[in-house]
Structure formats: structure tokens, C-alpha cells
Image 1 (cartoon, rainbow, N blue to C red):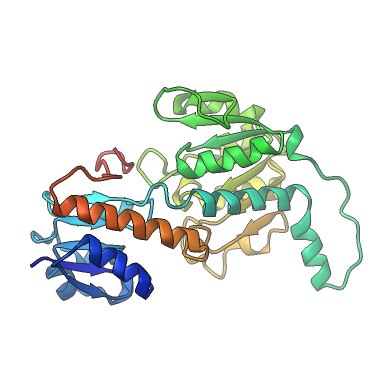
Image 2 (tube, rainbow, N blue to C red):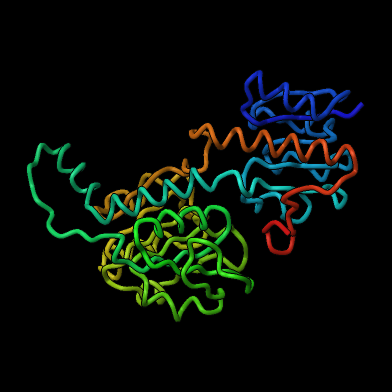
Length: 318
């Protein structure tokens, strides 16, 4: 009998779905923080995320199905045994994170964050001109499920959308132009909005350099709902304080939680949320994760092909 460790925050109805997919298996449910080395060592399958340091390359673990799209802590050498299959949750977060990033863009373009700050000061003031997304060129860096959802929201508002991908391919619905990652520098100066949805890999670390912020329009809005490692806090802070860009909205930081002494807290032209856009605050995220986990569990037990298998070289799904 195989042991299935589940760290998804499931309800009773979700347990029935998972247990139907893993008939005759033994299930153990706990929170991620409660997944000890001992519990992990007994698991044949893990559905959810666990502390990477507790896995210790368990030889017994056949499948780790994450509830995150990012897999960077788990692809580090020595974390997983070579026979463990790692799958991520790509496809579960498009609506949640895409809408969060979209809301950030509109908030910043319409100065709503500044009006909220003024409200707290009991200050009746006018912050002047705003802009319309319908008149903008929006650059989407990272055109996976989240990036595509965001692009389609922007397109529906009338924006011109430009997607950046690693590999060539057909231009997807909702994207007007498609360019490769190597062409990023050529399209940055055209963008009114730069939205980043990149995973944390060696190639994406510190991608947004001071030179790249300098190449952007001074009226540009930068949004990052991918990985905080894509931009150093110091570089982003300098770009915002110097006026190299107009504003930024970030759901992720280089260091999390953001240190109390960080100057980012004080910037009026920065909208900051604490890495919650891809959490389970939207019920849709949990429902999709449970369905994916059930499908992959059933496929694994039957020796069939799995969805969202992660490539350890790139950190993306294959």
C-alpha cells in the first residue's frame, strides 16, 4: 500500500476526490510546515509543497506534485532523488495572478494608491493626469498561463500586447506580437507597461538591471508577479526614486519578507503586496490544484504520462 502525503489545504470534499484517485492508498494530511523529515521519508507520493530541506533525496518518493508554479527550491542538487518525478502547478494560477497584476496596473495608472494614501491623511487633493490602458503598449515577459491571462485582460481593454517567450512559436490569442527573450532590450523602450511573470532560474536572476530600467519610458509602469529574484531591490528602488520609471507594482521581493528597514516601504510610487497573488485566497486556485493532483496521482499509480513534469535544467515544465 502506497502512502500519499497531502499538504494542500483541502476540504472534506477534496479529500474524497483525491482518495478516489488513489484507491487503496493510505493518505496523510498536514500543513506544509508540519511535513517533517519522518513524514516525508514514509511518503511514496507528495501532493503539495513541503520544506525542500526535509526531503533529503528520499529514495521512496516517486512523485512530488507541487501546488506552486515555481519549482526552484526543489530542482537544487541533492534535494530530490534521481528517480523522483517533479510536477508543478502550471495552469492553476492564471486567473488569480493575472487579475492581481492587472489590478495593480490600473491602480497605478489611475493614481488610486495615492488617493488611498491621501484618504488616510484626511487630505482632499487632486493628483492630476492619468493614462488609459487602451492607449498603451503592454510588454508581457513570461508568456505562460499567467502571462497569457494577463495579456488577454489588457487586450480586452484595447492595449497593444507584446509577449516575450524563450522559444519561437505561433502568436497566441490575446497577443499582438511575439518576440524571443534575446530581443528583450529592443522592445523595452516601446512599452508603457512591463509585466514580469518569470520563474526563478539562473537565466532570470537580476534580469532587470539598472540599464534596462534606464531603457524604459519614464512614464512606464513595471509590474512583477513572477519571482523577486528577477530584480534587485536596490536597482528597483533607484529606478523609482530617480524617475527612470513612473511607478511599479510588485507582489514578490528579492528578500521575503521584505526587511523592515527596506526603503521600498516608503516609496509613494510603489504598490507592494506580500507574495499573495498566487495563494489560495481565490477558491479557483485550490479547485484547480486538487483536480491536477488527482489526475496526476491516478496517472502515476497507473504508470501513465503525467502533466506538468518539470525540466530540472530550466525550472519550467517540459
